[in-house]
Image (cartoon, rainbow, N blue to C red; front, top):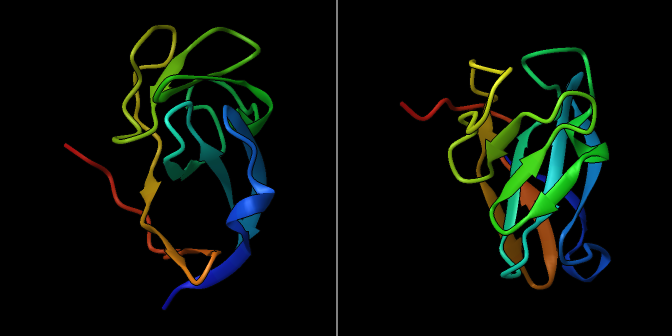
Length: 107
């Protein structure tokens, strides 16, 4: 089951928005190359929204402590975070963004 979130045109390049599906906060991100990603919105180092962070290339950085996460895998790329955030499948259908709310962790 996928959930319609917004129009793809609503997402700015290099920016993120926070959405909540079934009580799970998710950061929906359009990276610098224009690809759309969905990852868990809560930094695993602290209770901080990643959607408020900084998008660079295919990463997002937590604004509070500087941990960077891969938008593809959810894995932390820098300390202090060492646990990954979940990733969610994204599809764009007829110009609308859909997220599968089933989280996955890439190993």
